[in-house]
Length: 156
Image (tube, rainbow, N blue to C red; front, side, top):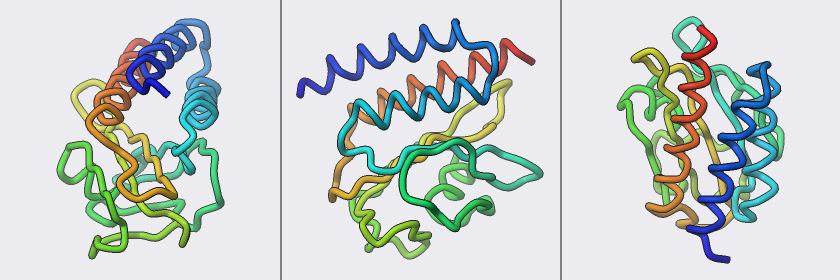
């Protein structure tokens, strides 16, 4: 799989969907589906959105999780908001602050979504492979987050 080509194609598909789909929640569901179906090592793909100062789970595809609300600073998801940056964890067993969704999960990437100058949520992806995510995943998912952020801004 030529990751770069796949990611370029998926970015275009997501950009097109952003223009075609009016309803935000429907759009989020579509993004999760596109990522989950086209990147085999993305084993849990979903969103968390900021609500009343904490992260609340949004649309996702993958094994069920008990982490439906996460405080800022808690776990990798909460840390990404607190640090205002993308976080890649190659081996979740080495994270002190890790919130395990599933015993099969080995690595994780969390990408904040910005709109109107603040973090409104994040893309959270787990993999059952160790060190599954690299710089290409980071660039790709930050681009997806940017498309989402612009869509949210255009609707507010």
